[in-house]
Image 1 (cartoon, rainbow over the protein chains, first blue to last red):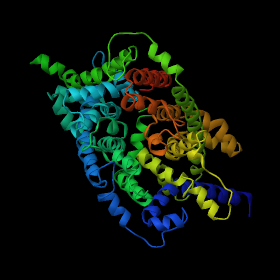
Image 2: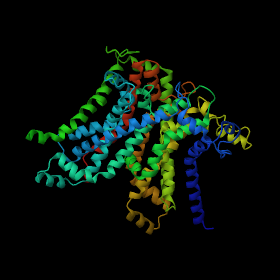
Image 3: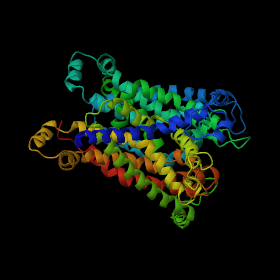
Image 4: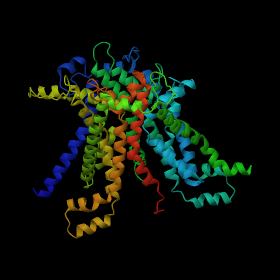
Length: 284
Length: 290
């Protein structure tokens, strides 16, 4: 064997080893969720289940206890859906319009305002948690899903504006000028020229926002009440629930259920997911 | 009417402007103000000076949280960058099924940190996890109980965080490698320069902006790390794995010490701004290439 082929084998060996490292937790979660507690106690972490059981999945979905509430993840899963769908839609629409203005309708002070929005993307949310809790109370939205939607929209428009602005900047300004000469107004130009070109960036924005909001824990745990907790908060409560025997298989099933929507999005639209991730960090 | 038409763009931006002004900058102002008062369970608004910051510095728990931030942050950033760069360079060697490998490396980034934490908590628990498995293979004295050892638990957070984010760094670097001018590389190859020299002398130096981006993103993730610690160790054992984010949360929502919460949040923000502001400044400078 030549040195070159040996190097090649080594290369593939290392790459596959890392692939196994990244897959291992998912594999362990999946196999553990299909084992009985008895098998978990006697078997090995990486062993395949001897007798597959779906009982833990049923329990995780509809009867596991999160704190004192024993209805499984189901109600919280729907809370997350009810929270994420409007929040994603609203923040994307606002981001599109904002980005359109920043890219094509420059005015004095626009740069400064854009910089102010960008800083808003980077603040640690801890710095707004307490006043936001009070504000939601004043608005009568404390502990409600509309309250969470509001919070996610407010702190999401920074990124969505950034996405759309960086995308629309690449559309030649001559196009807008020509349309204005023809008598088209602000909204007309947006709907007739920009919106039809926007499908890729809308996809990026929707996926980014959905992943962020679905996976959020900090806002969920700070601002939700007993009936409005999102799925991440409920998952954490189920795992830390102290009532009864520690059901690891149920914990793992619950973790996979909570992860499924974003995993699904990643699998079907990974390209756009990666574009969203890198859009914020690489020059647009 | 004409005025309206001329000002439509500004009017459209106005709601966002007000929202950002109030909910970002106004709220930061509120927190900054409260951090200078004697607020406890309820906010008080008489300025008292820097007493809260003094208490913070004197608090052993905050001390642990800051130490942890530096240990965790440094290891997380360095290891993620090394692993990410290595995987990117390896994947750049005309690897078959590169797409599949890339997908596998990056999927953790799509997961909630609560899911990641839950999963690693199970894998790392000494009773039934890796330790027990290796013992089952016949290595009776094998010990891997970092999760429950106060002085080691923070490293389990590093493991889980690297697992989550290193694939993302790989994607950043891979995009960077692919954007290097192929002409230069070909010229170097023609001149007989060995591959590793091409990487260290030509390709990696041109990727300096990507190193900076990766650093910023990772540092930002490290300082904001909250979910992962809550799910993996819940700050424990004791408060051994507290980070500033969990400290702040504990003060604000379970200890009822708004002054401490505000002061710790302000410190977090200053740490982030010390890192991000120079970066954003360089990003926002008018570019010459357009």
